[in-house]
Image (cartoon, rainbow, N blue to C red; front, top):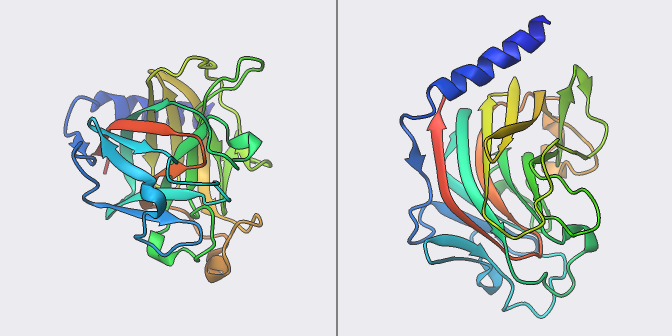
Length: 253
């Protein structure tokens, strides 16, 4: 009961201040302040113009790819790290998946937080050590909630127990139509995080930490079991075209 009360108070306190001090970290015009890292390429190389700005949105698309070929990518906001914060953005899947994209990656993307810096990633490392708010679109035949959590090189707890799988499903609705969806994350360092979809809290977890789950790169093995208390924010490129807009953040320090 005590833990539930604390979680509820933290969630309430974040929403108390939700009308003040929002900062746009995407200016709607260019990728100033952002850095690309695509698997197989050095930090800063935007292979195939994967990440671009069009109509005031960040668009992730693959018209210059002959084959996706496991080129998982991320676009990092590298101006500074974030520790305690409330992040809001909107996303929208569009068009068809790139040729060569894996089946699980259809209408699959996300936003990562508490991430390592892209310059510290190995050349062939597909995902940064981070926590992911995973975005999924409906495929018309099964429940496919969005706002899930995935843990590349990390671990978290739910209900005071370690989450055993790489990804844990939220309790969100399945969004079959490719409409704009509003996603939020409220994070208090390594203590607790909430995912919110279209105004509804859909998952909560605690005790964020680095872990060797088979995805921890060799240059970060020495950090195993360290608390994951802060880091960078990034958006994903996983083979299905997606758009992002209205990316805003507010410090909760």
